[in-house]
Image (cartoon, rainbow, N blue to C red):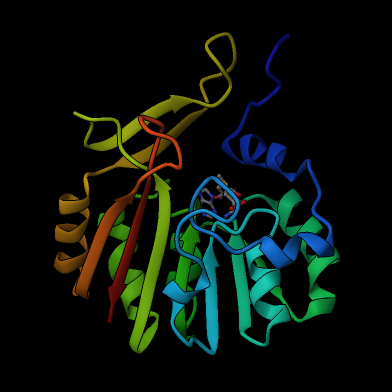
Length: 216
Ligand SMILES: C[S@@+](CC[C@H](N)C(=O)[O-])C[C@H]1O[C@@H](n2cnc3c(N)ncnc32)[C@H](O)[C@@H]1O
């Protein structure tokens, strides 16, 4: 079947399917690709305010907001943002539509925690993104992010055709860096105590999760 994706945002709009229920929020907050595996929201510390970069359907934003953290999310997919607004704004969550770089450049606001769960940190040039994130953190605030561990031997931007090989040329870039390379990138952007590791999968030889925590 032909892949209808003809723009980057259309590629991400498709993630709006699979709507979540409020009961899903109890187990929503995790960093790995498996429910209940690996560290949880304790990585955010006792943040009173938080911003998610690439929040998608907004489940993590809603889970934090429901527990009293002033939480916002930003995502480039309008379809997902509108769906998240309708579903989760009654819980106090707030959602912005836009690219993370433009959003961060256009705000004076600061947050205790800025985080990304398999989100925009993975899909944005870290040389541009990390200094902007640091600038928008409160002193002592932290960045926390996760995504798949890199394929060995890959480093830097990894291109993908979002519309498939028979579709339009929809280019997406995913950033690949080993934990030590991420720590260097974070330190170069001015972060302190940068710690990045691969959380092993629950089964031997399965794909692990790269997790990073760094402080302003
Ligand atoms: C794999 S999804 C993860 C969504 C969500 N964090 C979750 O755990 O379900 C990646 C999300 O990042 C968003 N995204 C990718 N690049 C972005 C950018 N440059 N600015 C804002 N959002 C972006 C996509 O629209 C998508 O919703």
